[in-house]
Image (spheres, helix red, strand yellow):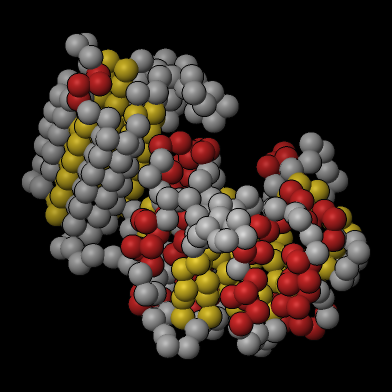
Length: 413
C-alpha cells in the first residue's frame, strides 16, 4: 500500500447545527450517545492500517483537543507517526485564520513536506461512515492518478447539497460542480481526496484557492488525471440539525444501516469509566439506545440517551436525543428534542410542547420540522413550557424564561 499521511479537516464551525456547535467544532459533536463525529474518520484510519494522522483544527478546538488527547483510544500514541493536532497560529508573514479547506492544507504544507509519504489522504472530519481506505488507495496507485475522489450515490433530489462528480466509462472524473441547481449525475463528493504528495504541494503553492470544493476542484478536474472511487456503504453528512437527528434516530431501527456492533470494524472513542445502565422499578423503556451510566426512573421511548443522563420518576422522554450528564426532572416531558450535555430540566417542564410548528425566527430554513434544541448547560425552570423549533442557547439560565416560564414555538432564547 502507498505510504500515506491522513489529514482530517476538523476546523469547521457549521452554523447549520445551531447551538450544538456554539461551544465546539462540528467534528467534536457527540453522536450515537457515546461517540464524537470525528471518531469515525480516526477509526477508519487505524482500521485501514494508516497510523500517520494529522487533525487540522481551527474553530473552538478545545473540546476536540481534550477528546483526542495523545490518541491512545485509536492506538495513535506513537513515537513514529501517530496523531498530531495542527492548529493555526499567527506568523510574521500574516498567516493565521484559515479561510477554507484548501487554505487549511496550504497552511500545513511544511508539515506535509516533512513526511516520508507517497500520498496524502484528505478526510472530512464531520461525516458518519465506516470505510476501508485501502481499496481507494489501491485504485489511486494502480490508475496513476494525481487525484482520486471518494464519491457516493445520493438521491437526485439532494444533489444541490453536495459537490457533484461526473465520470466517464473508466471512472475518470470529467467534471466537478459544487452544489449545482441541476445535475445529470448523482455522484456526490464525500470530502475524501487522495492526492499524490508532490501534486498537492505544487497545486496549492501555485493557486490562491481557499476551498477544495468551491474553488480548486472545479478548476483542476479535467486538466489532470483524476479518478473516482464509488463507495457503496453507509455515509451520512450530518451538517444540519435535521440530518444529525435523522442519522442518530436511524440507529434505533431493527437493523440499522450503520452497524456499530461489528467486531471487524470497531469505532473507537475516548470515554470515561461509568457503571452499567440502571433501570428503576417504575421505569419504562421502549426502542432506545441507552449508554453506560444512565439512570432511568421514568419513561423513555425511541430515544438515544448518552452516558450519565438521569431521567426522574414520572418524566417522559420521547423521540429525542439527550447528551451526556443531562438531568430530566420529575414529571418533565421531552418530545422531539436534542438536549446537549449537562442540561438541567426542572420538574414538570414540557419541551417540544404543543402543535404549533412555527419555524425558528433565526433559522427558518433549517429549524422548521418541529425539533427543539437545548444548548449545553442550559437550565429550564420547573413548570416551563417550551414549544417547537425553539433554540435555547448554551448556559441559558432560569431567569431568562420570564414570569410565565413560556418560550413560544420558533423563538431563540
